[in-house]
Image (cartoon, rainbow, N blue to C red; front, side):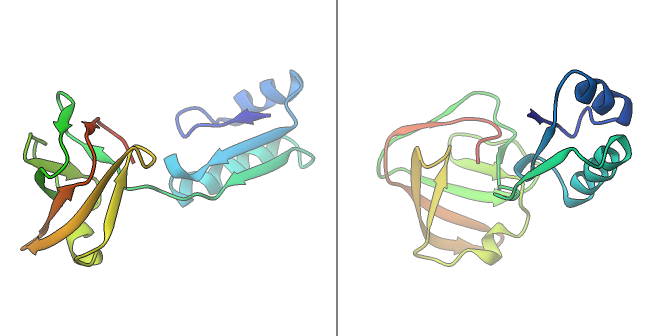
Length: 144
């Protein structure tokens, strides 16, 4: 079995893997678009139709972004969270989903780093959310 990334999935590469014994291709949709996943499926089928395809359907995740250094947070801290391209700072967390503030209701909880950090949504401020940190930790770049 081989997990195929969106960076390297050309038919020649897939054929080389198949010739080396790979008989299952895993596609991780958390890191790929639907269009890329379909390209991989089509390329796999162009190599051999007997190669099994395992689709990891967790789906795309909202990820932190533009963090130069880890952001240390303590229980009770308040942060502003919003989608965009500006730099994340100690009081501002930028994520890769522009509509986040409109889609998440006040009172909801947000998890980062596979649940290592928990935040409670306390307010909406224009196109951003105010959150309260529920446990101590560090926010790192590209964490879901």
